[in-house]
Length: 186
Image (cartoon, rainbow, N blue to C red; front, side, top):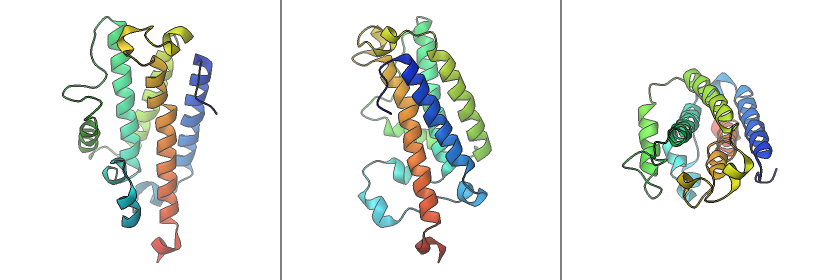
């Protein structure tokens, strides 16, 4: 499905990718869900994105999604209430947000997989309800909402939902393939 250009498509793609991610999780065995990632070192060495080494298991991926939901929820609610706060909490910005991702990882080492999935489902539902009142113009017109800067509100929503869900689906499927590869089974 192409990148959404209206609210209906944005919501449909978010729900589609959410369902796909939940389906991916439901089709993983208890072993696959709870076994740490075992991506080969030669694969990890080629990856530029920090998340390949940061996330150690399925739970880490799901709590990451949850926390980015929380960022968007808080930001949108603050802005709608007239509280002008940056999307990323201080001291983070778009140049150093990998530090925020590390902090998220650290903060959730005691969170269980079941807790993370439950929180993720709840926050997805919150996001979908929160986007409902926005018009296509508010979501997709650059500069229409001053608090989105040079971007659109939709780009934040897509990033926190469908794009992020797609990332999680691919990562979890890669994990499952690695666990079931002949090299890992030996």
